[in-house]
Length: 264
Length: 336
Image 1 (cartoon, rainbow over the protein chains, first blue to last red):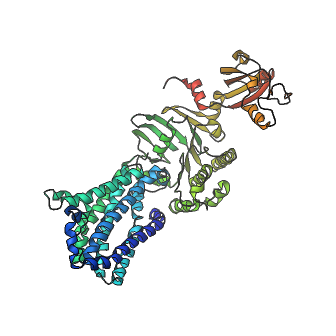
Image 2: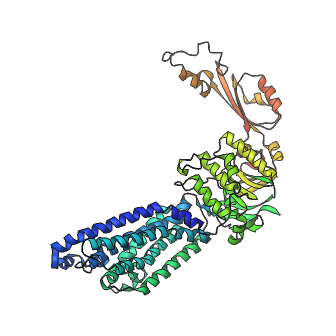
Image 3: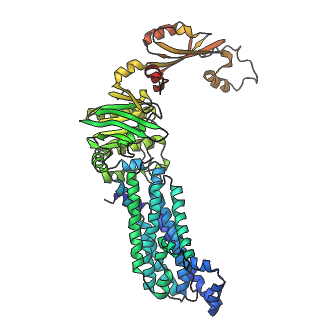
């Protein structure tokens, strides 16, 4: 078992390293800018927020920039992590099966004595490589860099936001995986998955505090709140459990679809 | 027990009925050629038998395992080798890595021996492979776990004539060892040497299955001949000639046979009159009209040679009749 996951995982190492380097650089940039930003605006910093359009503040989870926790929660984690890394995993998930079908490699793979369920599950499992790389390197970078600039963030909270984001990212990858078994072309699957994720991201933030709040219930972003974790040290384990269940459900749907599918 | 059994297989893609109630069996130890023109439905049958798509109705077995039951089919796949029509591998990895992956799942007891026979550049990335090398890598993976049944879709496509011969030798040796082979082709001549029996499919329907000798006896040759002079179709009125079609051209206009010589003669004056030159030493060159005739020939080749001997033959091609021609002749070309 796991021969396919190991094989595909090996070929994700370079991509994972590149993504980790990019996100670490992104985090460093934000963190090193913060002291200048905070000191030049001083106590007026949150008055800047009042100038933000309300919808924008909500979309990017901008609650307070007066503390580095609030700053990181909105700028790095809501925008960088929930949206950008979320899209990255949706994309990666979307190319798993569809790319092999599109490039006519799936016949060769399925000629091996492996079940279709195994092909889907092991391909999905290979995403553990970028997931682990990002979730271990970036928090270390954040903790060390905030220490260096003199605005330390509790390491436990940083570890918590990364740990809680694991089921969030697997849910994003799960959305991509379903797209990759529905569509036969990787490009279409990727656009569909990213479109769904971005749509849900903004839908959730736009319906907050409206009569349509219930609509946001299907958005993965509803179940991870960087502000609560970093500013209040509140870890919503129940929400994380919802994401775990969502991931399992998406993978199960993908397996069910792929098992019945005619490979074109 | 048949090694591969297709039973009433129908696959309807909506706009195309790719397989229409196809039934045949490949016996153990047999090399069976599945022949038909491009688009006839060969790949549909093969891919359905490999479980890549489900039949609209009907089904079949491979090595006694039901192809519509995934778990059952997986058990059979341990003993099946498969080569798709356009084998495709991850481009960014080496052939060796791909073989290692296949080996880790299905075994590779014959890998070394096969690499000696087919010799793809396994330490290079697949991206840098030629079509022929991809095909060779495909052949190695298809046979390396020492399967009992090998299914190949157009295995000789993409191989140069030398490799084609090596492939035929290889399949013959495998047959001696008792291997069952099911292969498809749209070029009869490429597989006639190795096949014991063939099934012919056309527009989704199995037209016939017969022993290869019987088929070859009936198919005939496709002949294309260029002769000097103006000759009518009647000149080839002998037994076994069908569908003669002739066209006469003015020989001085030349064609591909002499064109290369003309360009080589760079010292000719422009617009020079080359016809008057004493170039009769080139037997392909001739003053006056040239007639090109094509026909299908099912008779005695000696009689054809005798008949041609009466004329000045400039060029002669005799090849295996294309399968389409065979159909037109023996199975009715017009009905669908």
